[in-house]
Amino acid sequence: MRKTLYLKFLLAYLIFGIFGFIVVSTFSPGMVRDRLIKENAERLYAEANLISKTYASELYSSEIGLETVKDEMDALAIYMDSSIQIINPSGRVVLNSQKRLNVEDVVIIENFDPTVTGNSYYVVDRFFDTFDKQYLNVIVPINSDFKVKGYVTMHYSMQKIDNSMNHMTGIFLVTFLILFLLSMIILIFFTEMVYLPLRKITYATEQYAQGNMHYEFQVDSDDEIGYLAACLNYMASEIARAEDDQKKFVANVSHDFRSPLTSIRGYLEAMLDGTIPPEMYEKYLNIVLNETERLTKLTNSLLTLNNLNTKGMLLDKTDFDINQVIRGTAASFEGSCRNKTIAIEVILLEEEMYVNADIEKIKQVLYNLLDNAIKFSHHNSVITIETSEKKNKLLVSVKDSGIGIPKDDLKLIWDRFYKSDLSRGKDKKGTGLGLSIVKEIINAHGENINVVSTEGVGTEFVFTLSLSKKQNINDI
Image (tube, rainbow, N blue to C red):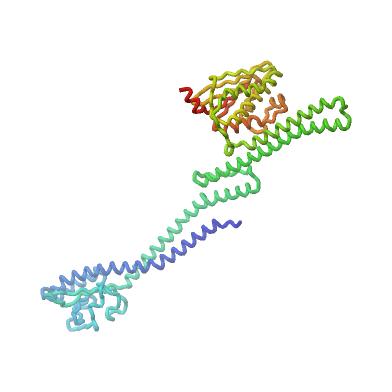
């Protein structure tokens, strides 16, 4: 797969710079030029209007002399950086700020038309060919006695406007270039905060795709990318742990199946080759039968555990008397208890105690807990089953005084096929699946199960069940 994301980002950055430069250099000059023309036209028109109402009107009404008006116009022309003229309606130039006053030198502007500005108050041209370059021209009439006596015209060089336009456009382009360079900070941030972490994540996913679930990486970030990296790391570690558990699961299953199969095969071969005499067949056939029962129990436990999961387990919840279930389960172990001279003491909170749960699965929980308690109890000992109530929950306790569970093994007893060294030495027929099944069933009910154990003293399992509404009504 071609890694083009970063190249695309760089290309987009360059395209932005190129098109931005083109836009600024293409549209800015025209916009700036139009703005400068309007601003200068407004400035010239305001000044020309003021001249028309003062000096020009007074000139035509003979209130002020021509020399005085000339001096004032020359000063204003210098201040406004423009040229000023007073023109008669016939086109005769009365005064011009750019020429010396000479009444004998008559200047006539051919085809002079004050309406050349149209609906506007300014026009850009050579002013009836009186200039050799383009000028911004403003024309204002001089009114006296309700008649138009003449016109005040002001002229501003377009070369100056173009120079200002080029200067401002240059400023815009330099500013854009500076901003473009400063925007490289965004590119740097993108590289450090997005692209490089993304490369780490991509490489990690490639490693995981190749089966290397133990590959670890780190992204030092508190944003969404850092969270994504942490989630990916966690996912890989969980998959790796699941793979390790699966390997361990297969190894345990293989071991627990291989041992009885090896025993069965050995005894049968010994019978066939005559190593075991016919008169001892019954003894060894019973051993073979016991091994087949062990395999059957292991297979059934595997099937049960495979069907039990907290998301998909189907529960047939009903209201039933847990006391009756406890008594019945305890009675089913009468033979096992007799062989080891073990007594089961049942301490129940009330004569009847109704809970809401799947009765068959709760029977399986009690059966597995009692089976474990009997296996690991000493001869001539007592197993106690006790119920109590707390916060609308029924607590069921199964306590033995047997070999106990080592402290380091307490967190592992719920794992499938897990057996501590003590349990393996005590009972080689155990599958290591009983407590896993118990945990799955209790979790499926949304309840909790805990264990307290001291090595050499005994073990107590306590699980909770929800009291039924029927029980709550009876309590009232």
